[in-house]
Amino acid sequence: MIRASAEGWARLTLLCSLAAAQLTLLVRSGLADFAIMASLSWLAGALLLLEREEQGSNPPLQQLSGYRVVPALLLLLWSLLVLSRVARLYDPLLHLLPLASLLGLGLLSGLAWRSSGLATLGLIGALLPGQVLINRFLPTDALASLTAWISSLLLWVLGRPAFSEGRNILLNDKVLVVDASCTGVNSMALCLAAALVLVILLPPPAGPPFPSRWPSVAAGLVLGLLAVVMAFFVNLLRIVLLAYTDFSPGLEGLAQWRSFSFWHEGLGSNLFSLMAMALTCLLWVLVLELNLHHTRLMRSTKP
Image (tube, rainbow, N blue to C red):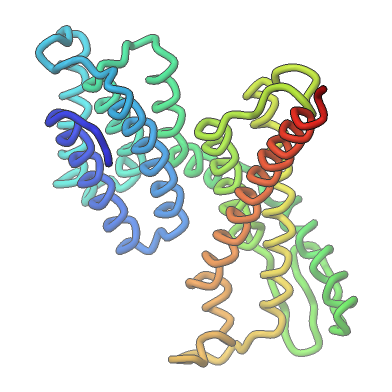
């Protein structure tokens, strides 16, 4: 049973409404990758705010000072303005919605400007703008060539003759061009975000098998590196699968499962992104379980 005050329920309801509105706009705009990242930000932020409500540490609204309430209301009003009008004219503003909303709700829940809780909410809210910046400025030419080369090797292993020529994969009957969207950059960004959220929500353990307390920054770096590697290889599997798809246009129904467009830019590509994120979560859960098992074993062997 969730224990929250009337003001707490109002904050959580507002968060859910803002999240639902933004996700609806992103999905209707065909930005499924951004919608997944936004969902991660909203869910992690909601869990942190819900934890504060459970602890009962939120002061009543009338006890908050004006330098918290006024900026919080301005951030939330700006978010509503973006959803109602500005998003139609300048869509990139929509990507800042989780950042502004989570900061505003954090201030209304009693968090101070310099508190670690508000900084954590800001970091989670910045995941979606971070993905936009990565897609915009990250050079992908070298990554595309590497993806094409390794994919051609995997196709040879599977018995499908293939050659790589720069970003092109030359097959007997077709040529696959590995562009920026085929490098798995979105999957890597999603896995990095998942690693960050996991370290925040499920902090790294202390004690054996770690010689001392494992800093959260180091845990995030190690998990983030492994997540990027897993996302890269999962994307390689998608590229290899594209070599066996049908390029015929207008496939419908179950025939879409063998369609090139389905696995290149449709729902199938998002399934691989979700698979990479699931592997990242599974890796971190495995680390926590191994630590828990080791701790129990050490306690049972003590005299």
